[in-house]
Length: 302
Length: 302
Image (cartoon, rainbow over all chains, first blue to last red; front, side, top):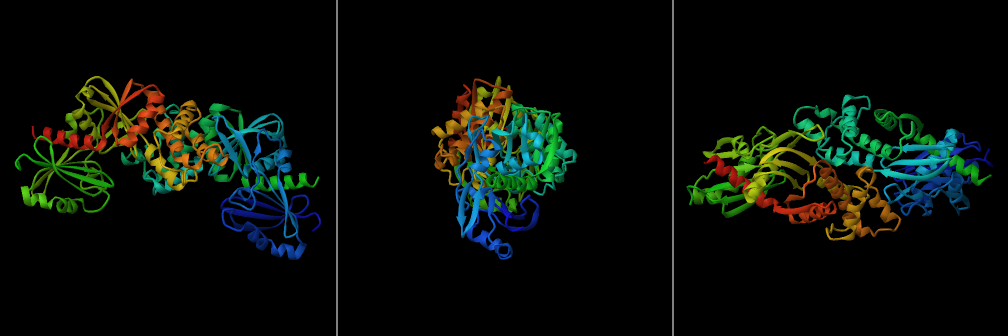
């Protein structure tokens, strides 16, 4: 086994997920660790895989995410869109660390629909994974939605990433529910709730008015007694996810959107897409990251 | 003097400004203190005016702002819009505190253009002040803009407040510049800067795309080296103020908007309005609050 085995590492800002993989990508073992923003990625990586080294020797590693940024292990330049899947593997930074071959995937950059530069780091690996897990995405035109702290809306054309746009939805929700008066003690977000639906409806019916002019209604509905305080987080989430989906579909509205994310975020975005008459399918975000790293490893060793 | 003198108190969440006023509203002395969110408004008020009491006896006081909310001294119910200026004075809560006559102004509520309830507390006093300082606002139709943590866009028709809408612009900018990666170490906001103008242009040219899909460009412009880090705060401010002004003018665009706020905010909003071909005049926010309290006192003692 050891000759063809390898290590796959999904290494974001705040979290590291390491997989010991067989040649076909099957997961034999896993480890978790701290994100790429903590100093000494090289030392922490060596420590995390030390027992695998003892058992199997120094296996090659494929890493993706913020580990390739200026705050990570080594900076890997962004690849410009349109980018074909094979180009991502080809643009990986390959080097030896303590006699181990390492490859770190590049991020992607583009000029987005707003005419501004846009960047991603980590999601490009998940896109490769989505294509591996769902080969039908490799032909035709698709809009992928990757919800998270920074939501990426990705245009795929015949398997190539032709562009993308980042929405700050996840971070905005976190900041407002933690630090503002809007949804403090505002309960948990429930995708099935009427409060989430009211947020979605309010966002959809007021696209012209804009999210900035809607957010305060989270507070004013509670203050005037028309909404219980415990509904505030769900309502706020509905406003933000609704505005996010509405803005994305204003540029291009397909019949179906594949969502690459966690189950909770998938439930929120699927319901929001439904409000606009758009269907959703779901690809688990962690599974997509792993599949993407396996794909890059396969392409580098073809 | 003492017979007709009175105390005016502009008492918001985080700040108290007390004025000793002559009968005509001329300011004879002033004090500052902590906001209405700190416990024991009654005791703190008595302590703050104790030396005025010794000099002039217990003068009547007119207070406005969050002092009339559930977190303040005594809750004063919101007055429903449309609300005529005289109705604000009439709806003040009047009571005696240690033999001193006190009046606390009510807040206003309405159903806003987004079909949601909306509320203000403190700004209604500034509106009365703006009408006192600028009597020409008492006839015809006007859109008043009151920038701050929560920006109030107020429709005035023949002197009555017919409705208003709250934008979270100030709070959003504060949260994003303090807690997010967007504009950390992002310099100071400069209303005259090219970065602020670039933010305004980006917001105006992407109204359909929406602010959520634009905010991240603050980061991506810096990461891709197309904008210096020190411009980030000005650019982010331009995005937010631009989206705010664009959304407000989408509902009703007059030729001229009176701004009631501090000089810095007036400079930001005046430039943003200019990008939409709308002129601006400025009424100092503190002066408006004082004039409004003087107006209420005059109406209560007519």
